[in-house]
Image: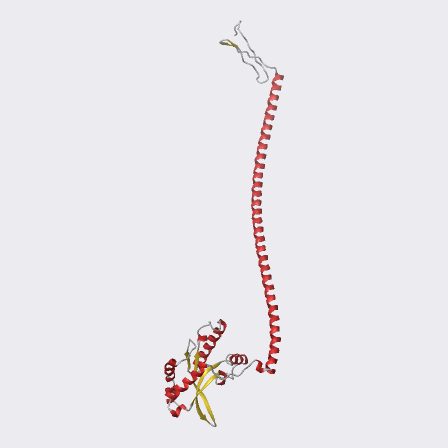
Length: 317
């Protein structure tokens, strides 16, 4: 039931609803229901279905787009990670390449230095060959000249001993005459500058190379004074060394006068003599005069040294 004179009546209808309800008259409401035709309802349902399908399609399309975006984003992220790794590997390889280049340069520098040293050695060898050939040529000339004109190279001295050796020879002879009985003194002889080769021989049982080396090692060496005991054996007289004496001047203690090379050679000779005669049980006295001056003040010291040996020698002859 409706008021006859409503102030305002509004009727809404459309495709969105199968009916329309709207009416407002001040504080009163009027509801009117208008039935829709069937064809409009079918069209409405069709449109709603189409809208639903379109919405569903759009939703599916959106979801597919989102999924595809995330997939591509993940792929891009993995691709970026691979690119970063490749860049790191590339940087590592570049660093290794630079290091290898640096090492190669170092090796090349070392090779160049070695080549320079080799060239320097070759130049030195060539120079030595030239000098050696010059020495051989000169030596050949000198060798021939020595035989043809020996006085050009050698001269005769008035004494076979220097001043200290002459005085030492006199002191030894004087002391022996003093400490030995007259009957035995005549049996002792003092020989100066005796070659070791004259009373020390090399074993014949040695191999050839051993024998040659052993012989070369002492051929040019000598003893300043050899005191021998003379005695007759069979049909000859034997002079047996009983005491050896070396007069050691400053050249035995310092290189100042003759240089380092000569000093070292002197030390080697002294060591060889000490070892040789100690092993063969032949007494060797080293009488030291570091200042190179033998005087009468040295006579008591020399007498004391000789007295240690000749009383023993006298009792056993």
